[in-house]
Amino acid sequence: DTEVTQTPKHLVMGMTNKKSLKCEQHMGHRAMYWYKQKAKKPPELMFVYSYEKLSINESVPSRFSPECPNSSLLNLHLHALQPEDSALYLCASSHSSGGGDTQYFGPGTRLTVL
Amino acid sequence: QKEVEQDPGPLSVPEGAIVSLNCTYSNSAFQYFMWYRQYSRKGPELLMYTYSSGNKEDGRFTAQVDKSSKYISLFIRDSQPSDSATYLCAMSEFGNQFYFGTGTSLTVIP
Image (cartoon, rainbow over all chains, first blue to last red):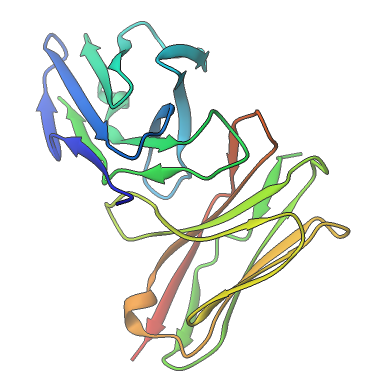
């Protein structure tokens, strides 16, 4: 099973709302990633968790707050977002952080900020 | 200079054609090379994964890596309309993050 699941599939939120995106994998992978993807662009790395610890934060604004409750779960908490944050948010996982393996992506959450 | 360069296309071919997709890169330390297929508004799906140089074949798909030229290719034989998607190359160096090309948009015309 090489499945990464993400919920919700779609999310519409106002700029004052607080919401969370969820990601789950049961492949025993120890690295999990959040990416942001705009239309016709490649995925843009936001955060990397390795063995449940935040290892990379690509200078992401604090209105995005990641959380890794355990080795199978990854959350992205959203607060006071801007319309330009509307995008497809992708979760991915791999055996370890970076090379030596490959990443498996979830289907994404399509986020619209009004 | 970007780490990974990929022609964005769009590329349009008739059904049954052989498709060649390519990426070049600048970091000679890259060891792991991947091709993903992404349908519109969906997450990327891993197609092929290659370590170091050489060829790898899986059904109608063949991935080639030429490390001396810093060039990777994906060939699709007997292309089908269902192959219409954006193809992303990605690569990494052990212990570091993944680098993506910009993606090539492919349309296979019935």
